[in-house]
Length: 71
Image 1 (cartoon, rainbow, N blue to C red):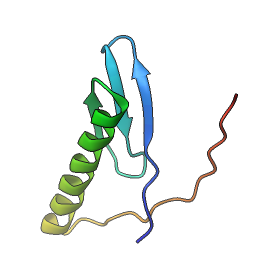
Image 2 (image 1 turned 180 degrees about the vertical axis):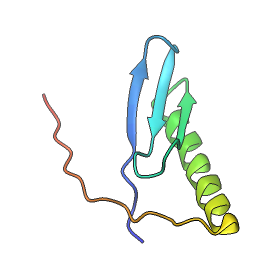
Image 3 (image 1 turned 120 degrees about the horizontal axis):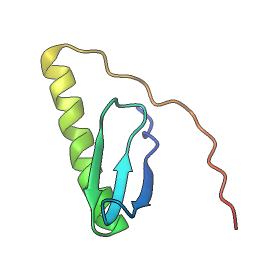
């Protein structure tokens, strides 16, 4: 299985970084640093996949996406 795309962005409202995996509905995490948000969302991803397997729910294939960076 290929890797899932992960978004990480700063949220001024939350005072930290949010990481989410768009292909896994509601799979997101918070961290005070980008690295912490990434660690947390990887833990959330594993939990998401474990629950889906246990419950017999379908596991979506990662969608291919193109990331463009400005700068």
